[in-house]
Length: 398
Image (cartoon, rainbow, N blue to C red):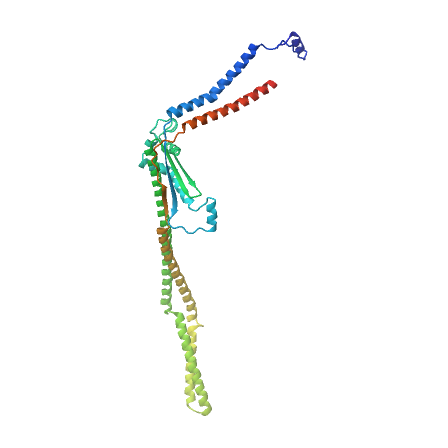
């Protein structure tokens, strides 16, 4: 179909006129269809065929067999208290208290400290570079020989997980030889046990150290209270002012009894013989008793150097000494309890399943990987074809 001279003239006037020249020839349609199918084939080859071929060649001829060693372990305490209702509820949703201890071991296994320990125990660099696999072996083409590159490569070979239903952790190590896989897994568990032992030592040392410091402080407080009490006794010249005051009160009571007796005797004599010379003697005795009673009362209270204010200071000092003595007893009990707890409630890493020596390589899953690459590429190609068809239809409509 083409434009005629009339169409051109019409176009000059702003009104296009089309002339029908007849259907396209079969050759033109066939060539267009062939070109379209050729483009589809090329796109399919690029998007699906080449990636699948690369995956096929890599998985069947290049990828090295890898062996997996698996171990299971649990972190627990020697004596665990009976869980409360809240603890049981938390365990049902996977929040058991012991999980934090297990996660500490997980963090160690996935840390640079573990890489440093493995370099010393099993020669990690050599174990991870036994193969010429460009994808899995260390170092890859873009990786260096630094410790950080080794750590990133190490994380490809080791995985650790936690099962919240039973509290068991699973360690999986893959390597290019069964012996390397088993040795690395065993070395990681040994390092985890060392970490748990360090946590035990630090926890026990900290608790015992705190208890010892509390005991030392209590002893110093008791010594200070005792020194102040001794200094008061020396300055006041009384061993126990309260006891002295009690004795003084008893003495005053005895004097008052005697005074009452003398007064009764004087009254009896005055009644029988008002002019008796004994009355003056009895009056002297009465005055002597009264002076003695007043003197004893002055010793107890009423003057600056009396026993009353001294008794208050003394009782304060005695109370402080008793409090310090009780604090010392409590500190000693806390120290004994901390030492007992350090011996009884340490953490333990128990190996439920030791690292096995694999007798068959289970990685890579060659045909599964090839099929996965093929299906993924096919999905990408299909989406691209749909998008391209939509764009062509939209362009034709314009």
